[in-house]
Length: 116
Image 1 (tube, rainbow, N blue to C red):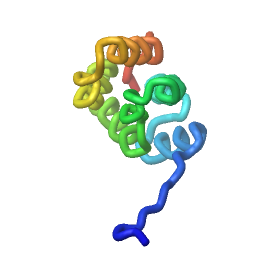
Image 2: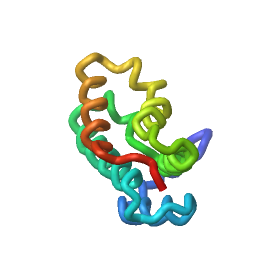
Image 3: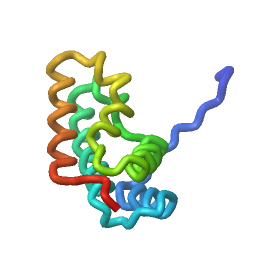
């Protein structure tokens, strides 16, 4: 018997996450920043399967919502907004993992701005 009961909740599929974020933030589902965040999340989940140090960086639904709202509030600062949100953990990664995360972010957000 456990002292504190817990329930594991599987993350929503990417299509449902995108729909929920776009509805709650008022951004169209085709918005380039949302597409970039979803691409980043997908590549990060794939990388986290082989490198467990990246597991804490996998974007949760709450983080996706916060990032979308911050991007709405700070147009043209997409990479800075996302980096600031994740820097608390990224700064303490081993150098190789840190480079991997930064490269994935640059590839996912390439050519995407928060302009509405």
